[in-house]
Structures are given as C-alpha cells and as structure tokens.
Length: 416
Image 1 (cartoon, rainbow, N blue to C red):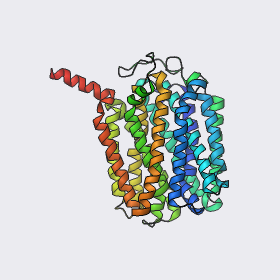
Image 2: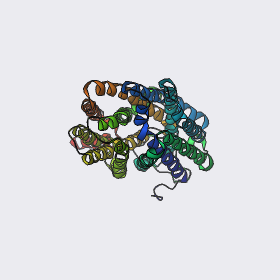
Image 3: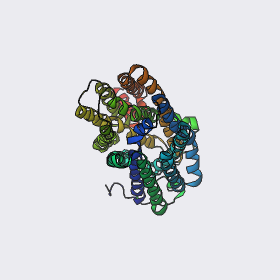
Image 4: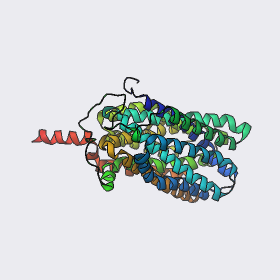
C-alpha cells in the first residue's frame, strides 16, 4: 500500500481519522442509552439528532470557504479541538436544551473535519487510486467504530456512560495534536496542480483538467448529484439506525441492553471486510454501478432483519448491511473526486457533506414517528424503501459515471 500511496501526509490524515473514529465509536455506542437514562423520549432523541445534522448543514458550505481561505490543516486542527470540547462536556449536560446546543456544535465541528480531510485526500490521491485512497479513509473511521464500542462495553459497567464521552474528547484532542504537529501545511492541503507533493503526477482520461476555470456552484452541485444522493441516503440511514436500532433490539427483539453496545462494531466490521474490494471494483468497473449493487443488497438485508429472532443472526445481518451500505460512502467520494476538477473539490465536498447532513436531519424525525406509532419493523421497512429510491436514481443518471458514459460511447460507435 505504501507504493500506491507514497505521500506520508495521507497516512497522517488516516491516523487522525482513526482516532476520531474511535472517539465516535466510543460515544455513539452509548448515546441512545445515555439519553434514555436521562429520561429523554424517543421523539426528543430524534430532535437531538436533527440538531446535530443542523450543525452539519449550517457549517458544510462555510467549511469549504474556510479551507480555500486558510488551508486544510489549520481548519482541520481547529475543528478537531472544537469537537473534543463538545463531546467532552456532553456528560455534564442534563437538559434537552443544553444537549441540543452541544449536539449542534458537535455536528458543525465534525463536518469541518470531514470536508478538510476529504479535500486534502482527494486532491493528493492519484486519479486511478481515488476509490482506494478514500476506502482507506472510510476504513480508518470504521476501524474506530469497531474499537470504540468495545471500549465502551468495558468501561460502562464500571464507570457509567458519562466517562465514555470524556474518553472520546481526549482521543479527538490527540487527533488534533497529530495533525498540528505532523501534517504539511500546504495551501488548501494540496499542491498547485492538485497532486501529492510526494507522489508523481498521473493522468486519467476520465478526470477533468485541474486547470479548467471554476464552475458555478450549481454546476458543481449538478456534477456531483449522484455522489450527493448516495451520502444523503447513507446519512438518513445511519442517523436513524444509530438512535433507534438499540431501542428496537432492547424492546421488541428482547436483546439484553449490554449486548446492543456491540452492534455498532458488527456494522463497522462489515464495512472493513468489503471496503477495499468494493473500492477496487469501483475503480475498475465504474463507481456508480458498484454503489447500485451494494445499495440493492444492503436494502434487502435491512428488510430481512425484521424477521430475525436470534441475536447471532441479527449480528450477521448487521455485518452484511455494514459491508454493503457503509462501503458506498468511500466509493461515492471517489466518484466525486474523479468528476470534479481540483479547484472545485472544496465546494464539491461541502455540498457532499451538506447532503449527508440533510439526510441526518430528515431521517431521525421521520424514523422516530414511524417507530413510535408503528414500531421498529415499519421504521426498517421505510429504510429499505430509501435504498430502493437511490437504486432507481443511479439508473436514471447512470451516465454521471465516466466509465459508464465511455462504455455507452463505445457501444454507440460500434453500432454505427
């Protein structure tokens, strides 16, 4: 892997993202249980998730401007320390209002980290390796989601849920220190031509020229609409599942509460198992076609989950769902990197993360209503419907993938 990714800055970002992923995993694994212990109802939990997504929505576009103005490194450092402060103060807050404020800024700092890290990685990655580079980025986060819940499962019985948030804050602060001390501070996180400082220049016939004039915001958004649709669907799905799957397991499925903490780890482990393979298939066969197949399989698995009664079978289903649906995210980022010129990447990533936030903003409130009125089964079925809509969307706009468009042109030429 060092031969394919010779730029040490990419590996530094991976290390910081891994620590951030552990921080996410530690805190998210116990979030629903912590809120339930405070007496926060299911509808209010959906509202808290919406405030988190609201922070992402508000900050996603400004994050792209900040990166163009100050560079990826200082923006990433400030956001990591900001997130550390937000998650560290969480266990000391007892009211829904105070928790909402913390979740809002949690989302704002989180999206700033994502936009800065993704921009730096996509600009430094060679065109033929973008899915590979972004899959390792996603795997770094996913590895944290595996390790984090295990840490929580060990800590919570002895120290309670509050301590896990302090651990998350310390890990995020360490990630900020790593970026501050070790990452090169090139303007915007990239070289003048959008290539790595350490890697040799490369070319790809599907990649737009990095010297092209800046596109309008609407043109950038239209160019990356399929990637945005993917991240919207995943944000909607992930935010809904994190909050309500543990409650569905404890309630109708009668799973012991302590076992639900490990469910997040199975989801992330599934992603880790397939991400590299899916990324290589995306780089070779077309990113959009691979995302479509993953969404179909994952959506079916979500629907089948309702019929399961064994906890082992549920964990297996969560593993498969993670392997398919969570693997969509790095491939959608790679597609975005392939179709977007380097000078437009910060804006494209801002739109991408805003779409993710919109999914997170819409998913939990809708899911909370469905869960409260008709139960967890109805909630999961509607998530299957969400992925069915995404599959349809990828069929309508299949030509957005350069490889698909190239195959169509070749087919038309042969037909003539």
